[in-house]
Length: 82
Image (cartoon, rainbow, N blue to C red; front, side, top):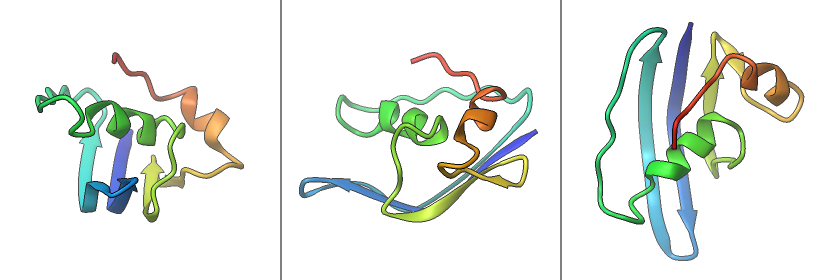
């Protein structure tokens, strides 16, 4: 399994959290995300879980585009600790 974030743009109010952000995570891979409060760590997890939609860009889970039609199916395969 692979999770891909491609060219993600996201801002809240006037604060830009992600600008052309790209990330690929492979099954079994562990990541540590460390940043100051408000930098977008929880928002990144919420993007992958489909709770937040990017302004631009795409998110794929195993080549399946994350969208409203398949978000429930994707959530069966994605786990996170926040």
